[in-house]
Length: 196
Image 1: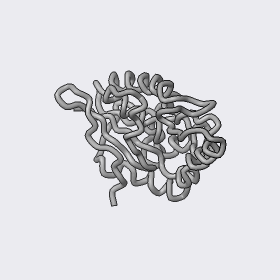
Image 2: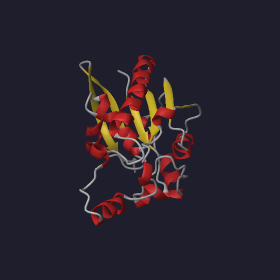
Image 3: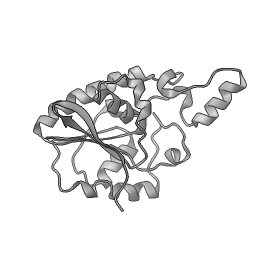
Image 4: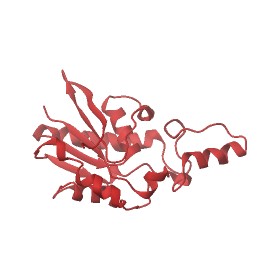
């Protein structure tokens, strides 16, 4: 049975420091480049029906360093548009909110002011999943993108509300396997670290 492998790009300076990185085109760190060279090593020698990659350089570079010679850039795999949060940490944003008496904030429940909410990201990943499912008829499919967009994608794979993506933590240079059991969509593995 074909699998949908989802991969988060390697480390960047902003992912390392916890800053929201949506539309900014931040490169991988040296550590991020090293991570991506080992990223797919334990998956065996696979031929992909298709490889779909976010347009951001950190995702494209991850594909290249992981040994992917051919891939298609797919705009719908771009990271969440964080609006006013871009370049800031959650803690910084929460401090600003609480200083003026606003309640706590959570990205998946509340969305990004001036950017996207979970429903909007869900619309994009639904299109990605529609394409991936078609391609899986010909073999395994690889997606290389970003943490939050892939978390929403995992929720939608399971036919959950996009806001449930909050429950699918995905670290830098980590991957997941989405597949089927008895014709039902399941998560085979999630947040799998690099092999030693």
